[in-house]
Length: 205
Image (tube, rainbow, N blue to C red):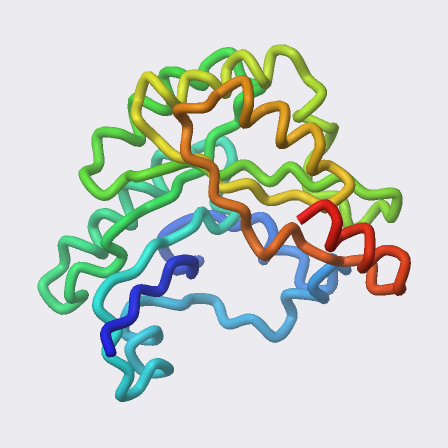
């Protein structure tokens, strides 16, 4: 059976700056990066998928240097174009900050690379400080939402990475932009695991 890996990451500290890997003991929702290797490349993906018929894949932005996000797209395209990569990754979901006044220029830069398909910006806001993945609640930011509509101009999708408590604002964003494809990441990240929260998450989904 042919398989498409619809969400994975490549990274290499030799090829770029990954701030989340610099502080190896920093506590996050998913733990600490202390046990994560300094790189994960197509050959590593092939090694762990073994005999599976992995046909294609979608790379999701991996916390690359936020000052130079187009460089990640350039690097990923070079991986895809390498003769031993089998075309992996076949699609790239890049990073862009829609609160930035220069976001349209950045989207144009990303689209210089043929495998670009979409954008992801982490939106997660939570009462537990180290579970926050965004510096503020962008879904409530008028400038962010206005710039978000630029995705339609470039025919790009958007990967929604948020908590269930933010679903209502995401729904209103979708209604304002019916022609932009939204992909919900990690089932809405059900981080709170008490029964009341799981029920609320289920209702949000």
